[in-house]
Image (cartoon, rainbow, N blue to C red; front, side, top):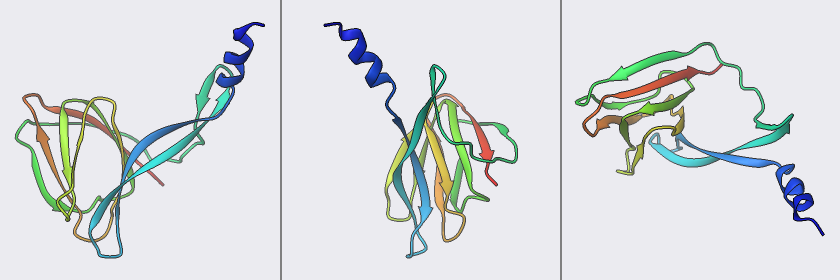
Amino acid sequence: MSLACFSELIFLQSHLMKITRIYTGSDDESHFEEKEVELKLSGDMQVSALEPATGIYFRQAPTDHLNDFHPAPRRQYIITLSGQVEIETGDGTIKRFGKGDIMLADDTTGRGHITRVVGDEPRVYVTIPLR
């Protein structure tokens, strides 16, 4: 019996990609949750459903960047390309994001969150506003 047949069957299954969502709770404070994005087979790749966006911003924040409590200006994906950032919510929870990490900023109301670059290199990231 060939194991290649079994590995091919496993590959054809759907997979999930995990991202972090920050959202406004009923207490008007921002909170984190892990969100799973389903990936389905498309040719030889796994692909998510299309999410309509309005464009993309390329950004660089210096090592001393600190943005006190603020809500997200709109729903948007934020993908860190290099450097590191800490996001802090109103209850004091802090999550660190680095190269390749994806966050869905969905806390467009309430007090918002704190953003601070950490480490000794600037943070390079992209922001993708959603429709």
